[in-house]
Image (cartoon, rainbow, N blue to C red; front, side, top):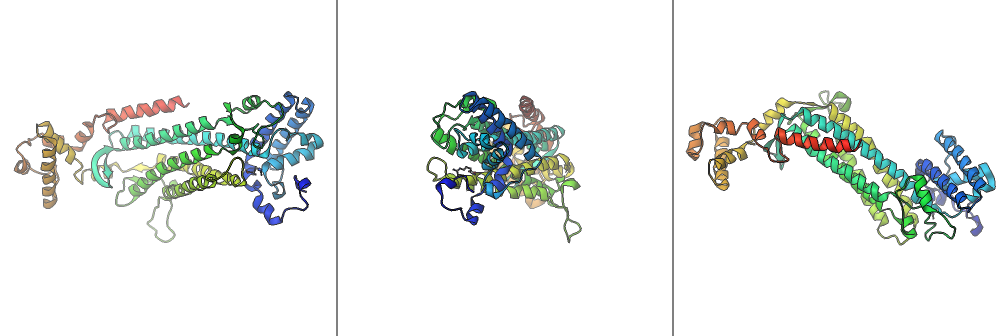
Length: 459
Ligand code: ARG
């Protein structure tokens, strides 16, 4: 028999029950549901809304249910519809009429809003920790590769020389922002919705601030209509996770390229690569590809959820039951990707020789050659034109700026002297890039210091 059978003449259709039930996916919030109920019961007793002894009885029984659910002893049935009704039904089975008093001064809308927030607070912290782990690895890689010269690209064309350390710190900065974005979400979502009632609060003398304190919420939602219908925090989290995945996907894309025979900058550890069923020579970067691919899922959740919420009148609407699967899928995806991605990056080996080799082709020191002329007094635009012509000459004659003779240089400008060769050496190009944020050793060390300070402040 349904909870609401008083108002109805017959039972719901079986197919309706199936469509209506959320227990298959909201059962993962059983801890939050029970803990929330315990705090609610404690408050009811304290406020004499129910007898304090009955509150105690409810809390003790809930503890037992929690322990049994932890051990998988309680089946989750479609007939219970959702985790909130499942716990309440079990409570009433165990302690009879006293159990029926728990739902005084609260609603399921209240409960789902509470459970979901509690659950997501925990998940956000966990993901934040996983990003910090990746940051540690990037710092280590950067420290070990301050002198590892590689080409940096624009339009995927070799552009200017950088170092692998500099490159790693670029990703570190993106991930640092991802951490702070999640922290921002956390700060905003840290409000207790319970006590909003179904939508307009309650006539009982409840103490929401006491419940907030019991459950570790920083604040209490200030408006009950908003309290039960706000899912902004989910959208913020999905957006932050989408951005995080976008960063991991860009990084994955680079790793996939770096693994190709065309680049061969890195080799993935066997534990983080896969082979082919037919081509014996293959070693594929499946993990990086999966991370890139799964980024689409997380974006999908964000778009899906924004769409679910877009036209909902206040307050709760059943559409909102669709919130959890979107968010859970995104969270599960990120949690599945991050640790493997971190381990993959941590264990990959660098082919420094190939990186150096690639950097020595493609005239990536052309800007430095122009800067050399500028330092000798030529305006940059003129120097730029001269070097453009030099590069053209090199391409036509199979040469590089390093292998041009001084005579050849002089055909385009008398400014060049013997010291041009030193000025355009890749090592010089990198070490002279002392500007704040650049790839020279002192600049990258500063970047590393900053990220290390950030990591230290999170411990
Ligand atoms: N299972 C529901 C959900 O996930 C709980 C809230 C139900 N409230 C209601 N009025 N039907 O959203």
